[in-house]
Image (cartoon, rainbow, N blue to C red; front, side, top):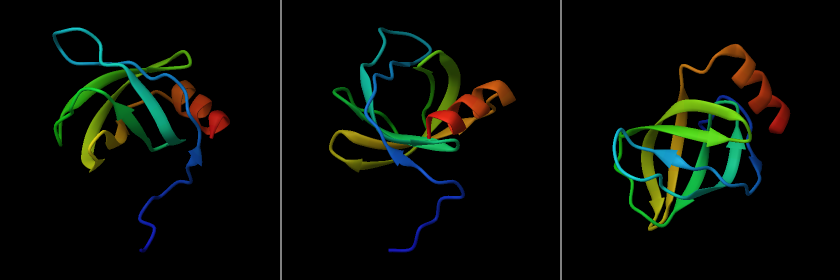
Length: 93
């Protein structure tokens, strides 16, 4: 399989609450992480192309669900993150 990512990711597991416009937060845990996105496991389903707010070690940003990879794992792309947040993600990854 060809790697399509523009930036590298590392395997790392950490809490990552996800928030929809309404309703209670969705408990999530990262599978891997990079400056452009992450894979996250959740107990509740997410929809492709859904936008969410995420919290990750002091970083608060917006992200879009790209696809479901397994029954509980989703590929997520970060959207419109300010430079300080991107720098922190690069540091984590």
